[in-house]
Amino acid sequence: MIPIKPLNKKDFAKYGKIICQEKENEIFQVVMSEKEKTGWRIGYLVMGPGKADGLEAHPESYETFEPVSGTAVMLVAEEKTPDKIEAFLLDKPICINKKVWHGVSVLSEKCEIKIMENLEVESIYYKLEKPVEPGLA
Image 1 (tube, rainbow, N blue to C red):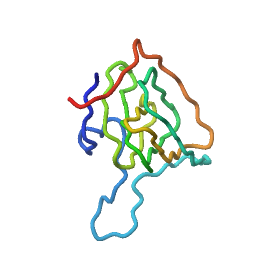
Image 2: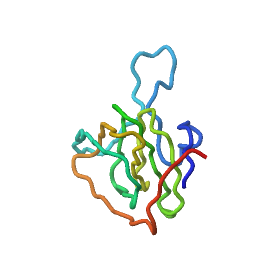
Image 3: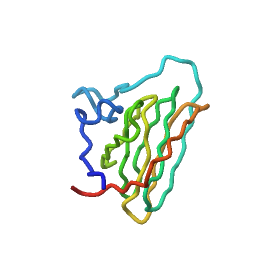
Image 4: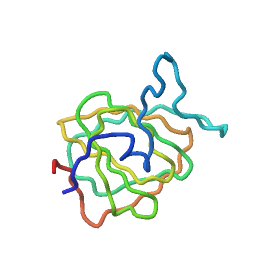
């Protein structure tokens, strides 16, 4: 079982960014931007509970995961070490960096997550040796 960590800037930094207000007293802030001229798309993910048996990564696209309802855990691993998975409670919107292995594990009966990413997304997949289930340590 992989222990679930609280989502915080320091521990999550190597995988991506928490989408939040970074400067007080500013009502609008750009928290991330992409200089490449690509289109983008909004997706809506609906999942039920189950063990994760694989991860995916996108070499050329950032990807947001913005929780709408339910309880989910974000599974992440660095590009060169997909078997070294960390699990974070997905209770805030995040943006996953390019090339980061990631997956979602749902703890509630159903979970809904808004996703934003490039219009065209190359995905690579990694099959885990055995399914993983995050849990409280």
